[in-house]
Length: 298
Image (cartoon, rainbow, N blue to C red; front, side, top):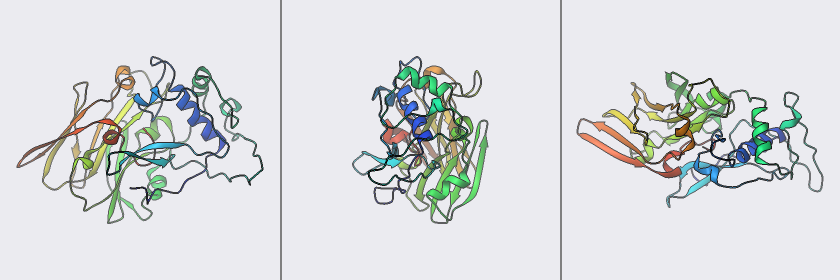
């Protein structure tokens, strides 16, 4: 995916913009109190307060690199409602959905404190989880699911239109609601390279799940690679996650439960790809290699 085929910009309703803004502001609070979904711990050091402009669209960093190594900007996760843009010179009042508490709505142009943002997150109305059938067509309109792998905590499916593939994972949607996680949007004939093994990271919102449940997810996958017999990812905490390889696809998932893991930068990840001829290693560093999802930030 590049700057010429970004999905169309979508308008966000006031409730959705308020929730996103609250997540961003809460992420700037002291480290021991924060952990925002789809925001890397590193990103939490940026920006103290955000002001939402009327009709503005939230932009999140995409995990796709440009040739120079920079990152592109992509619109917010699909699934946000398409609200009409007020005519020039007119003013639109923010009206919360019936299911939302008025405490979750922020008037455009208003600023709030980080402590208030955290309170809003605790009291937030959960978003219903999206589905792969709803999210994948945003990128591949005629794709169908060709294979799937289920794991303890989620499910990932390989979708293709015969020329291009997307992996759709449900963990983030199942835990916190909202969008699924999409990886790939890559030609089936693309050569194998470090790009093939880039991963996505998701972080659970405060209060998600139960004690001892995973509070983060690292995930990567794609179509089965001919000749590859094993794929492993080694993380900074020493954990080595082995990918599951089926006749049609491969999938690596790591669901750490440590609070410390979710609060610190991901650091360097070493990928080892095994073939009969030997082992090829790749080093993943920084957002360009570890924020590979194509439909929301990380």
